Image (tube, rainbow, N blue to C red; front, top):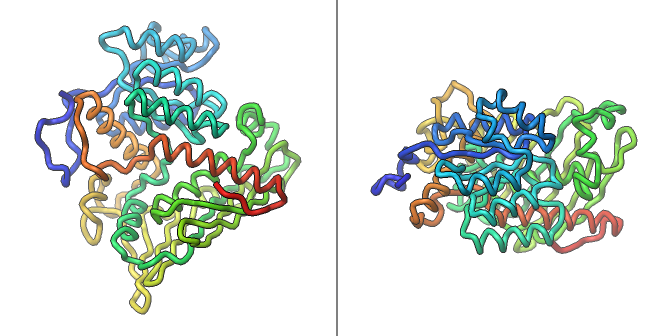
Length: 393
């Protein structure tokens, strides 16, 4: 048994009887970042990887990852086959490859009965996302998607405030994700950028599929409202590129709640400019990624209040499970990824133990959230191609 037989579901996440074994698919910067976050939780150890399709580079990665060469595979198919035959095989894998590999990699591990945490966008095509949803359901595997922004403690607090009626009936939702790293006109020629602008790898979008989908998921996660319709316009605002670097959208959520969504990589001075505003009949919530430890909460007619990340002082018990340090000692994106990998560990351990978990105990993004993100991307492409017409998701 990985989980304790008895523990308090309202308290902190429990310790496991051993660290779970994590496989890594993809050997880039994001893989290293997520592995750091997973290790930080104390619940994972990196046990194997498919770090490159080039055999020499794949084996050379053994030294970088402190792994034996026989656990460094030249393909994810080889890794899925080999790890299922080992008594110490991986419990789960994280997929951190370019977008076009997500579907085939995730499918290979699901078919092998191995749990998956996949980067977003889940896939480049709606049909593939739906296939993965069906396959995950049929296999019984845990399938998480790295909408990591939903794992910040103050976002979880905002979600609880909305669910508890803290801002009343939602009237409008505004979300934006502004970055500046594509501002130079020659950036499209940089090696680490090329795949993000290659339709064969990135799909039919670049900016929308990368950061716009984060914004769309965050708005739905906090509001508890599904995005139903949108109008989108794609733009190339800087030097020539084969895919958009900017998008502006009018949005509509369940119950005809209106909103806006915009994303760009050409906003000098904005590095992590993800901002969410949810306004209701009795109050409002505002959150900024670059000030991620603070949540502005207003009740109309009352003084503004700011909830800050840390133990106590307005933070709910379920949010405290995701907090590692006291106020004044900053936490950020690594810790948010750590929260994702903590919840993923709880879900994987419960599946290994054959144990059912209480509804709502884990709020990590799942395969259906990933599929919804792909449908959002598809709808934005269709709207842009129709000169900004309203389309249904």
